[in-house]
Image (cartoon, rainbow, N blue to C red; front, side, top):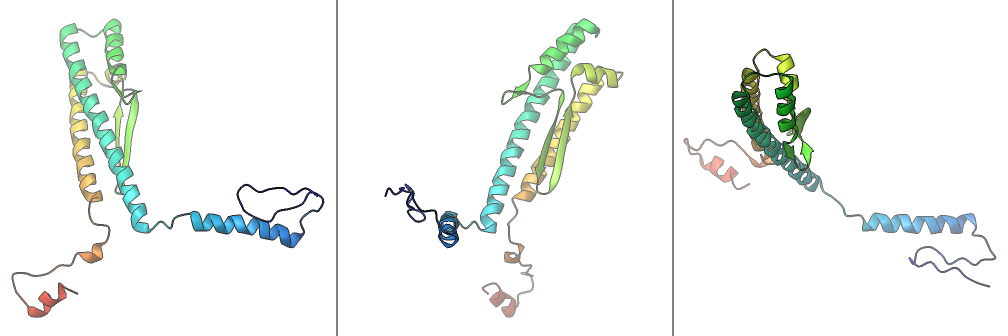
Length: 192
C-alpha cells in the first residue's frame, strides 16, 4: 500500500487504495483554512489609514511633478510661438510634437487628464494638445496663460489637500481648552 506525502504537512495522509470519507475530507479542508487565518496578519484600522494616506501622498507628489513638467512645457510652447510668429498647420504640428515630448514617468502628459483623489476630494487637470487649445480659443498665447494659471491654482489645491490629509487620525485627542482663563479643573482635564 502506497501513501501520498503532503509536502505542506497539512491534512491527513491518504492511501491510494482508499478514498477519504466525508468527515476526513472536511478535516483536510478545515486545517489549511484555519492555518491561513492564523498566518494572515491582523491589520488595524490605523494601519489601513496610514497606508491610504501614504498612497495618497505618493499620488499627490506624482501629480505635482507632472503639473510642474506641464507648466515648464507651456512656457516652452509660449516661447516657440513667439519665435515662430504666425501659427499655421506646419507650426501647430511642431507645437504638438513639443507637447507630446513632455513626459512624466514615461507617460506623455498632453492630450490627457490628470486626476488625484486625496482626503476625499478630487483634483483634475485637463492638458489638451496645442492643436486642441488653438481650436478652442482665438488667442493661443492667452490659452497658454490660462492653462498656466489653472496649473498654479491646482497646485495650491493639492497643497491644501496634503495638509488636510495630514491632520491627526483621531480627533478625540484634540480638545479645546481656554488657556487665558485658567481653571484648575480644566488643567486636571489635560491629563485625563
